[in-house]
Amino acid sequence: MTPRELEAARSELQRRRKAIVEATRRADAEVDGLLEAERGQEREEEAQTEQGLADLGRMGEAERAEVQRIDAALERVDKGTYGICSACEEPIDPKRLKALPAAVTCASCAGTQRPAKH
Image (tube, rainbow, N blue to C red; front, side, top):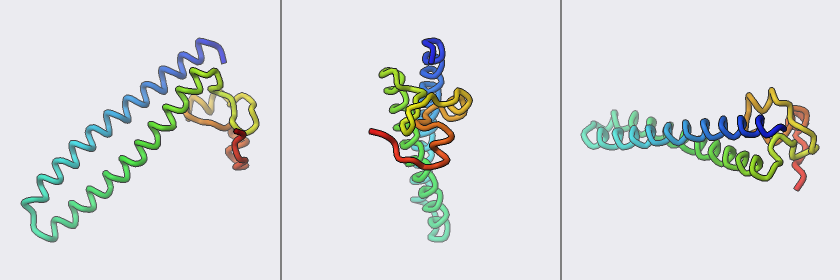
C-alpha cells in the first residue's frame, strides 16, 4: 500500500474507533437511565428493563471486540503489515479493506478459513 493509502486507512480506522467509543458512552448513559427507571417500576416492568439491559450488555461486548480489532489494525498500519493477509501473506484487495478496514485476511482465505500464520 502507498503511504497515502495507509494514511487514509488509519483515518478511517480512527473514525470508526471514535464512533464506537461514542456509541458505548451513549449506551452506558442509557443503562444508567434504565437502572434509575427500574427502581420505581413494578415486577412485570422490571423484566422488560432487564431485557433492555441485557441487549445493551451484548452491544457493549461487540463494540469492545470491534475496538480491539481496530486497535490491532492500527498496529499493523504502524508496523507496515496492514493490508497483508495473515494467512497467505498476499495483499488484501483494497475493496475488501474499504468495506472491512480491520480485515486480517483476504477474501479467499476468509472463505476457506485457513489458520493465520504466526
